Image (cartoon, rainbow, N blue to C red; front, top):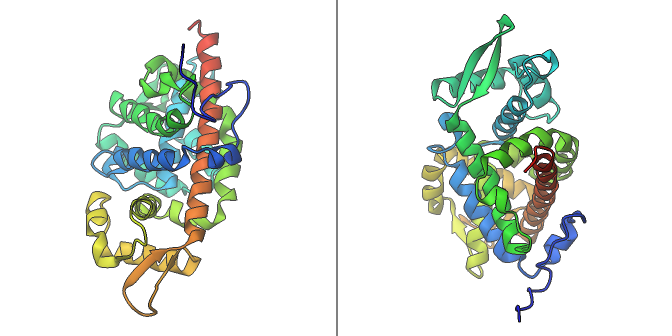
Length: 300
């Protein structure tokens, strides 16, 4: 006789997940921990494409490069993954300026993450072609989104993403464009986090603090305690100081003793980041189902 699945662990792929269901799931604290742990791995500057610190502008630029290339059809000019098309698509998200994209693309070429190739039918055009180095990172990044969902909903689970299946990666990238409008709306609905998404490594640093706080009751910290995060995510101590100042101004941090250097996370931060994580997982579920549809259409 098969053991019963834990409450809430079954997932009907035909029924979209909701943030409320994810937040109410008894496994959410563990899923949050896994979400943070897995994203820390892919956002380290030594791993992140271009060897930059991560922010939402760069992350969305990378995802869109992969999506545009997956949809490339040689005979259809509208699908050509050009720099102009990349800028137009990224502009929908509202985080990366054309100048930032120019700089980032040039850096990706330097680090071997991207190649600029001539379009065979128009030698004046250059196509943005992700190398295997970038595609490998993209599979790790994709797996990082589905690791926490596997904690919550192991049946039927998300095996294609977790196994870094290359055919699924292509199908997922081809279909994910359909979800862009929903993802954009989700990002901008989390207004308290917009500054931290835009600032280099700020989001993952605050998520790391949330993880530490969850593991240790009454967790307090000082700026001086964050040297390991500054080193890991390639930012200066002054940048850390600016993140803490912005978080305190937003109401995400408080000082138990005024004007003393010790900080503590507030319930507002915990609620905002939990909601962001849940919203992110909802859209990961959406794009997974789109990817499955794409695989089926390709005969898998």
